Amino acid sequence: MPSNFDWNQARAFLATAETGSFSAAARALNLTQPTLGRQVAAFEQNLELVLFERIGRKLELTPAGRDLLDKLQGMGDAANRASLVASGRGQSVAGDVCVSTTDMFAYYVMPQIVADLQKIAPQIRIRVLASNSLSDLQRREADIAVRHVAPTQPELISRKVCEAKGRIYASQSYLERHGAIRTLEDVKSAHFVGIGENDELLDFLKNWGLPIAQTNLRVLGDSGLVGWQMARQGLGISAMTDDIAHHFPEMKLVLPELEPIPVPYWLTTHKELHSSKRIRLVYDRIAETLSANKLPVRLG
Image 1 (cartoon, one colour):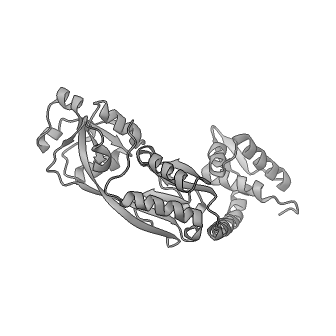
Image 2: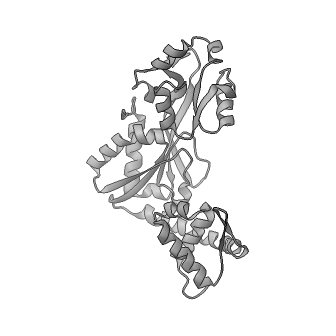
Image 3: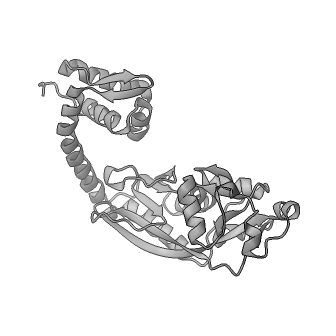
């Protein structure tokens, strides 16, 4: 490494190599894309190496870039561990706390949690990361995650704070147009609004006991929020947890005799961060809210 080695430049290269684009790396590091691009260019200039080449619309590592990536990933992991330890030792209740959760939870539940936190700890700034993919807490993509699955990494601590029930719902307008759904036989001709990958969703619904095929999946997407709105507009049947669905009187329970699917809520953070006063405060507040009999829901 040259004597003027700059970790910020190296971190920009590392994030770009791991995410595959300048835009994704800039989001991960909370930088503007031009700033990140300049850091990568300066890193290449200081090393006198070409680290990336553009193939079509994609960035690909050069052989030199791949060699360097192997070396820097260890440094990146060490830096993340140091950051976790330092953040965990912080005893101030002022500062940022990033909470990662699904788009549905972010829209319908987080507003009330944030409002409560602003009353009891106004010096904490909450950043909500709404994503239906699992954030990497070990790499500090978020400080706290609200998930429907328990973590497997030993560095993470988690608490199952409640469990909702998932059922099948359809809007009154859909039922009026397509007819009532009283039996599993009626499901065969029904339209479904789905979230996630096509094959995985189909397997999930079949394992639930629903006799459907690919032709039943009429609307698909990766946003739970958009999917629920589509179902509310009468475009198809949708699975939803009771704690959300019961706030929408136009949505009617379909096949009430069908066994509900348990939907657990796991609250997760890194064990080093759990000792941070501000992160622990937010963690405990979310846990208290989820442990209540009803989740606070923002309608809209």
